Image (cartoon, rainbow, N blue to C red; front, top):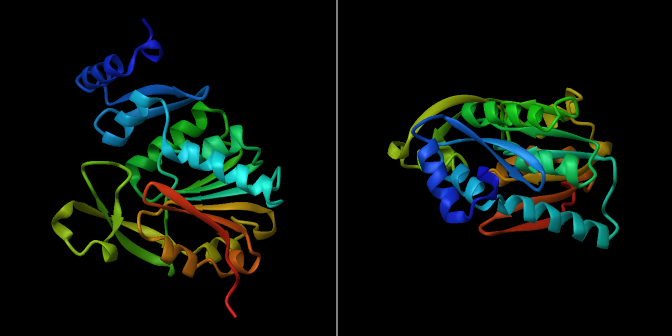
Length: 233
């Protein structure tokens, strides 16, 4: 029997066994394909449930935008903390965005992000950069937590350095990407920030998008916060 037809208990057992045989498996989610690492707890949840909260949050956010006249079909989706691409791919393939800019600092996550863009045939529609988004340009230290690929944290937000190994990653402001024409602010339909506590840094470096009053979703706890932020006065 194909793994996609197994129940949750059997899928969990399959994933555990697969981890002894291969570093990666694929899972079908809403007719999209995602490759995931078999040593990652978040990947395990995605494989077993065939769903992630961010997918539901994105659908809800787009619904809210449609209801309030803020949805722009064919616009650009900017994904800060893109992880392995579930939100980016869903935005382009399911929610009507024409293009996306996906920003992910963690090396392993970024590798899987690139794989998943190719697997879903959207690599030509997505600009993917291995960067952390912050309020300054340079290099920052990213602490890699072993328990989940979705909880890596910038060192200033994690005082206990012993919590995990760390890696230096390039940091940019969204304003820098606007200046370099990686992001065209007038085409952005939604800014999505899932930066595990660093959302304040993200917005501090996003003055151009704030001035354009681009719709913003920031993930917070089990839900999300949405709104249009005014630019600085």
